[in-house]
Image (cartoon, rainbow, N blue to C red; front, side):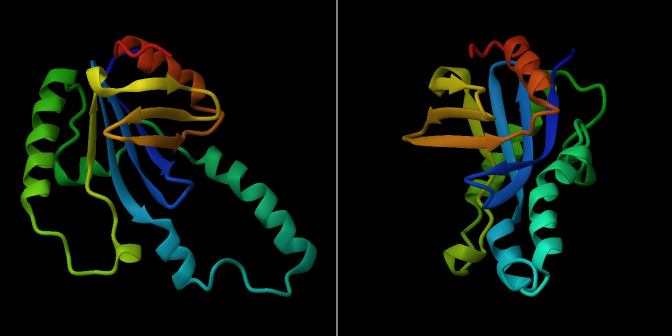
Length: 169
């Protein structure tokens, strides 16, 4: 395996957000792109009632369907020129760090909290505590616990990427 590695469409904060989780040497990044709570609200908080057994079956199989279409190294960052094939961890980190610094300078939109997508996140190896890959990726950093759902199909790839990046789990 060669870093950097992107895990695309990763759930964060109890599936409130989806985004791209990027593992590099010594740094983990998360770039949220979809507010799932807002998306559920806009579609009426789920499926229409009255679907009965079909609705129950759809609820049961949707995580498996989502897992089947989960990708790696196809992040949304590719569309804005931040992710380039063949990049080293160091060159990608430099570009992502500049981007995150620019995003953090921008004033927060005057939107209600429930409609926002968090700003991109950066977690250096030295600030990560209690890293675990049980049930996904979970660690403490910046006075908070961060919980990402990777899915069972990409879990081994995540463990390998974390090991190569210098993260003990």
